[in-house]
Image (tube, rainbow, N blue to C red; front, side):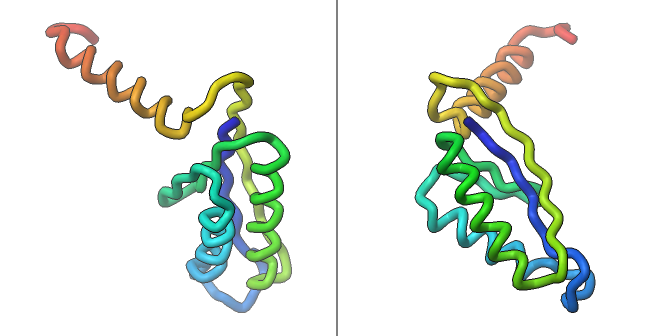
Length: 107
């Protein structure tokens, strides 16, 4: 499964910046050893249900030190029997874009 999540502190002394809290969460993810990718809005993790949600739980705990509340958004793509989708989905998308660009006039 792929799980994209975003976690940040709410109600703490950090002001507008959540950089340190997010860094703590991403450090937990990277230390997990699971395939992952972080962009400007979400961190996506690939693995089995229990291991992925354990990492999200620990990342959320890491953020809780930075505020009195924690906000968490989760989106999951649960597709049994499929692996390496963190990169595989992007490779298929890039191929589809390349195929469209090779067909003149295709909208």
